[in-house]
Length: 420
Ligand code: NIG
Ligand code: FE
Image (cartoon, rainbow, N blue to C red; front, side, top):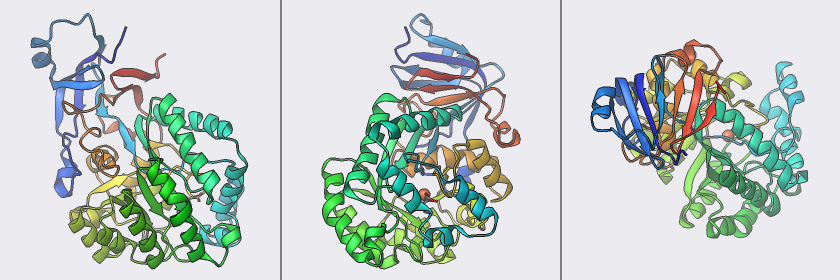
């Protein structure tokens, strides 16, 4: 029986992405590839990675290991999707059509649709319903090679439902092989009962919900939608400083539609990541680079909202660590598709395929404070990886929109196999 012991041998390449911290600048292009590579995973942890002949020379006992011959196949670290909102009730397909007819995302939100629409459905959904939908979405993510996903609350906007969403993610983390990292996004929008009283709503979050989230460790990060007509820079700073005091890591939905200075705020507060950044200023980007804040770019959202893309080239050329994520959510970007994100990042944001791989592996891990344990194929890290049905990582964006992942291995066990 496989106890998390696997030997992968003869891989046409092992794309190690080797490293234990976020990659910046030219480092993002160096994937540290081993051709004709092998990997040994023992009890779920990577024990060796090298050329196949070298690994086999020191490894005779194959009895206790599941052996995979990966001839003609590429092996990559599991993808880390570091920004999603995957636990939610209801859908908003009609809003997608309204946007096609020219009504903007923010207009829909101003008219009481958008996030608030999902809040109603999520408040009405039972824990079991949210859990069952969550499992289906995680299974879909798995088929794209995602082995760790971040999930945000933010469709409750009250104590009961924010906690319900975080508890559902806890349950999912226990039962589904994908690891889930939880973020508290109570300040995702202003609920109808607090309309016009944004500061009162923030007081409520700070005094009634955040302390419970922190104390019970229901989330590792705190996030806020810092945007014109949602939460201002001052309000964002107020909440995030409190969250920091209570021991949470910081994330921020920053400079998505309007340039408010969210990138600068992320740098000032030492956030782990600032996300979206479609309108981020050059000064803000440079400050993020200096402060070591990961820029998490979500090109699926820019694409779906027909907004201009984030300046990925400028960020990478100015040594800001760039991560890519799906932003999977029921409104602005309803997708789990990693190949879609690759296509958009390479074709529209002028990232190289190598930079996109780094952005979805080691830099995604860094955006979740986990670069020391996941995001690369290095000895001592978790045995999380995928095997492609093609010999090179270059097939990922090349095979437009179609997943090339044949097998996914999590903690040394095969948990997805296209062939079965
Ligand atoms: O990251 N921009 C704000 N929040 C989400 C969208 C949430 C929704 O529309 O339901 C995002 O795009
Ligand atoms: Fe988001």
